[in-house]
Length: 278
Image (cartoon, rainbow, N blue to C red; front, side, top):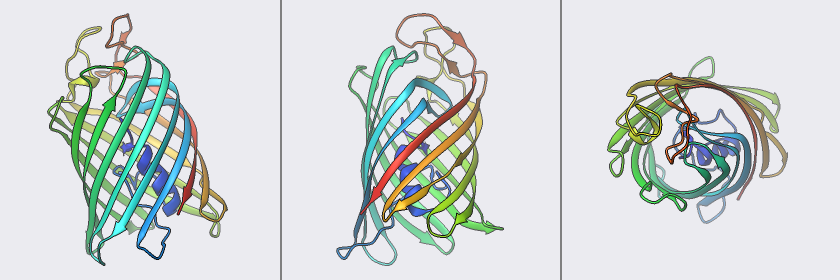
C-alpha cells in the first residue's frame, strides 16, 4: 500500500522530491517517477527514509506513526524508453485496520516513454504483508501526465488494476503546481487529487469487521511539501496533507476482530522524507 500515491506512494513521492517538482505528479505521481541524477553508466537512483504521522493508503487509515524506507533505480534504454525498479518498506505498530503491527514490503518494476508532451509509464507492483496471511496481492498500472498544461500547472492520472486478491481497479487523477522559493535548493510543491475505485473490497467494509465494497468516489486530498536540497544530491522534504475520505470507507474498523466505526474520516497528516540520489 504505497502512494502513489500513491499512487499514489512513498516511492513516487521521494523520487519526485529529487526530481524537483510536485509530488505524486508525479506521482502518480502517483506511479513511481525515476530519479534524475545522471551517472556515466546511464543508471540513476535514490535511497530514502521517512516518517509520517499516519499511514493513509487510498483514503484508508492503515495506522499511525509510519516509518518507511526505500530504494529506486532507473536506466535509460535509449532516448525513447526507460526502465525503473524499486522496493519500499513501511511499518506501523498500532494498525486498527489490520490489527496491531503491520509490516509491508512493496516491489515494483516499470517502463516509461513519452508521446509529445505526455509522459507514460506502465508498471507492476507486488504487495507483501508478512504479518497477515492471505493479504498479499499484485497490481499493474498505467500512468499519464503532462508537466505543464498552463501557468506551470501539471496534471496526471494513474489507473491501477489488481488482478490478484482484489480483482478491481483504482483511479487517481491529480494536479500539481510548484513554486521556486530559492533557486536550485528550495521549492514549494502543491498537489490535489481524488480517488475512484471499483472492486477494492479489501479496504472497505459493509458491516463492522466484514469485507465489502464502497465503489465509486473514494475521497479527495490536498498536499503541500517543502523540499530543501541542503547538500548536493541530498533532499529533506517536510510535508502536510489533508485527506477527506468518502463516508463509505473503513475508518478505524479492524479487519482482524475488534470494534470500530464505519464511514470515512478527515485526516491532517504530517511527515518528512530524506532522499539521497546517485
